[in-house]
Image 1 (cartoon, rainbow, N blue to C red):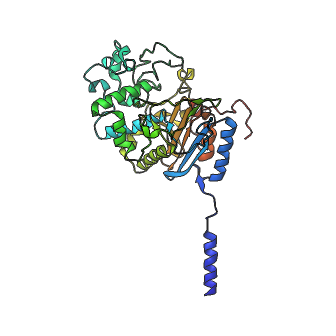
Image 2 (image 1 turned 30 degrees about the vertical axis):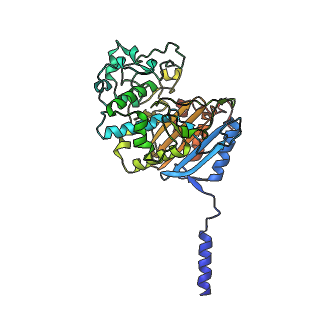
Length: 404
């Protein structure tokens, strides 16, 4: 009897893991401890002058690690938290892509039907409360009649990113809108295309974007601190954006919903959305099937700036393309689906590998953050597939010999 008790004690002692640090599994199956990842990220944040950064890692379709580093404000010195409100920038487009994919699956919108078919007036004649948002410059260019929802979501509509910015990134004070190319024939990132599709979706459904998002995304997922419009409840719980020299940027609040980039959210809640997407993908949902269907192959040297007009085969090995509001690449671990966000003082990136149940979400309130994205992706989940040069995620020490 005493021997049996002794043996049971040894067994329980050998199985005890209460003092072991949690571990994370990378894409290749290798593991690292959470404290080790903490240390690597903190070093990068400090060295590159990143004001604040949150990192969320997904293993087996769920959050396995979530930490905040740095400050919510460089002036007050308040620590950044994972429940702080962030300007979501173009992460807004990923949520919108999911919303439209739902509508398409329900037969409410046909992704390949010209948007003009859903409207009673010509697109150049549409009226907006803010006149400058209109598409009147397209009058006389009948190609606008060919634009579809799929083209808007996959950035092949031919419209510019924003009417005040040229395709090479130069400011255009006249703000004239025009088509760069025949719709559906090339890739060129376009917030204007998203805004056009938003208008049509609101016309088809008779509901505003915020109402649709609340009904179909935010409320079902318990995303109370997420919205395409600024809400009074966000006061006192948000972080400030910061310039490269740690200057604090005054908070800008959205007074109208914009599918292309007005969403406020928190790392906790956006991670909840990504968990949902991973789960749907694992279950073989036709909605994520639509979202992540690769479209036109992307062969531009850069996503933005002068390099966007140059071609390259550098990303052919990952078959870089775009789906419905999400970028798509191929890896040895299956499809990778990603979405970035970039606004003044805020830089974000997320990538999911649904077949592996692995992913990462990076949300930062610093204009220096993208300079460490490449290394964080590699260290945290073993992602060496994100096209960091195409994204212009140039490492902070890229001009120096690496010590690794």
